[in-house]
Amino acid sequence: MIYKDIYEGIFRARPNRFIAEVEMNGKIERCHVKNTGRCKELLVPGAKVILHRPDNVSHTQRVTAYDLIAVWKGERLINMDSQAPNRVFLEYLQSGKYCDNIACDKDLTFVKSEVAMGSSRLDFYVETASDKIYIEVKGVTLEENGVALFPDAPTERGIKHLNELVQCVRKGYEAQIVFVIQMRDVRYFMPNVRTHPAFGAALAEAADAGVRVLALDCAVMPHSLTIGEIVPVKISNGTICP
Image (cartoon, rainbow, N blue to C red):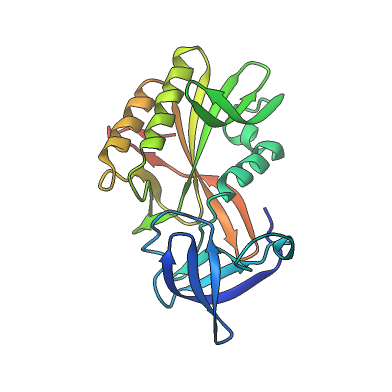
């Protein structure tokens, strides 16, 4: 995915989860944060950030002219746009790379976003000539010592989605949870059991029930985000995927 109208700034403060104060050319600009997560390890005063000016900004009721979409953590650029993982994963599906890397070289014959399953909505439902697959996508922005972690805060919604994926398997479908890591050069992914042990347990139970657990890294540039390679997954029950 491509961002147009990209600018650089210096993060100064986050008065609330929706707003960041960013210094641009010596002036403080209030920007919309496109991630309501805590992101405390990313949005630290003095961090270099990437801003995007939406095309329609002058035609809306917005009170901010820019979106904060990425941040430098040392030498690593991390995309933190919470809408980006689903968008880049859809592009990945449409490119054929999903089939080449994940679905055993079978072409997709059907793709649908935002599909109902039980009392939840899962991100994607896809079909090949022989498979019917429900997919839930989670964006990952937390990294520690080269390890990507999810979640960065307790997520009962995430556990609910895992339970729905288990139900998909029991109904005869294939089910996958895909962690889109919004950065490059990580060693592996694992659930953040320190922050939310129940999510780690639910992920292990889902994997045992037949839910496929995948992680994909991303090539991150100031103006773009593209899904890259499959990353190893370590689950709290000792399972290593893929």
